[in-house]
Image 1 (spheres, rainbow, N blue to C red):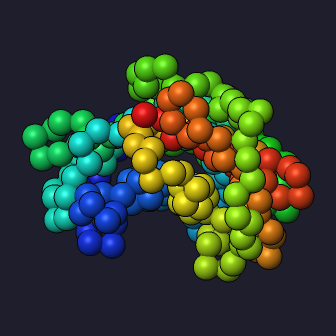
Image 2 (image 1 turned 120 degrees about the horizontal axis):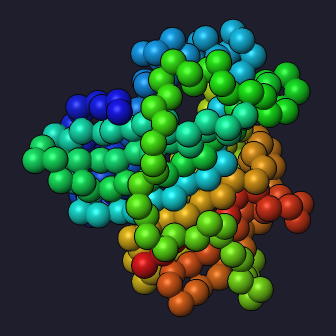
Length: 233
């Protein structure tokens, strides 16, 4: 397990004064990057070798998220690697060790030049700790899209949403989907599947559906699904 002690910053807060969903996912994304860096497989090394990690799936459970300036510990472990796929869990804890949120994730290692999946064995062998993933209860293996999903207001992808892979960062994708969740929908869990990257200049048409347990938002481009997010009560 790799751990990182930090504090909650104002820039990470939502309107309620607590760590926002995007702030939480940023913490998880950042610790994965730090973990790989400290074991010799950081961003610069990956870029030099023509490799990049693409997130395929988030499964997240939310608890009592911390307020501004709270001292927290973020934890992660890369626990399974099969060919191009790598599974990694995350958790957030308060000063007393209480778990405030946890997540499981699936990543695909790709060749930057071709976009094709490539073996992750040599990349993750330095920090892989085989084990079990977190118990996230009944979160879906695959997000199902209701047939009655209705179109929302279309929007364009702008450059400020991009990351080092030159597509919309996975956390920003969740934030974009969250815009279309009705205000009366509260949620304590999140399931996200990434099918295609969102690229600069693309026109995105969201599809939105309310369900018995929350809301599903699908971000589509030219009729193709790019990101499917379920916000679960």
